[in-house]
Image (cartoon, rainbow, N blue to C red; front, top):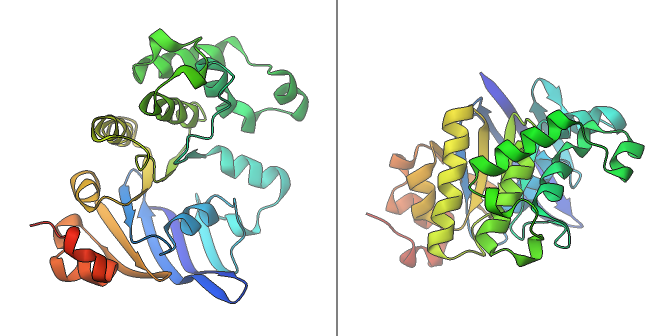
Length: 253
């Protein structure tokens, strides 16, 4: 069963097409990697799905609702079911780990509750449990500006998980990290997908990482979807089709 259905999705910035008539489906509990060169439309796709930017045309059916038609409280409720992990963490660095993680519950709060940081004991316990799951229990009350990049990204994952999401979108979550920290982050994302059945869609620059972790790979070039298949089908020819002249350094046997 498809959790996400994207149909004829198009996005223009002025006269420039960032996405051109994109269509694909993502099943419940699937791990999908999105690859392509810089400027190919990967980030625009993720941000359209989460309505961080408006689409120009098409449909995005998530959990049986066209989220492009949602407004106000209905959009807020839909977004609460979609966790978001950013390349540069998007944390409030002067706040503690637990405070940042609890921000993931803001989609369920009234404006007043959110303003004053009103959280139930159940929500606090849930946040603690997720922080422990991600190996950050020694850093619960530490300010995020005192953490390493890999630790900050784990806080970002915890913040997404505390939402009780049905899907997590990740916009190049390892591009700012060293190889060791990158592996930790990808292992946690895979663990979340396998053990909790949460759908994961992740933008990646690293073809080898996409092939290792994903069940399906979407390849973009120039705003068009040029590959949609299992990792084993990502041949040298297909990699060249996605990356063009950059492919020589990316081809994997």
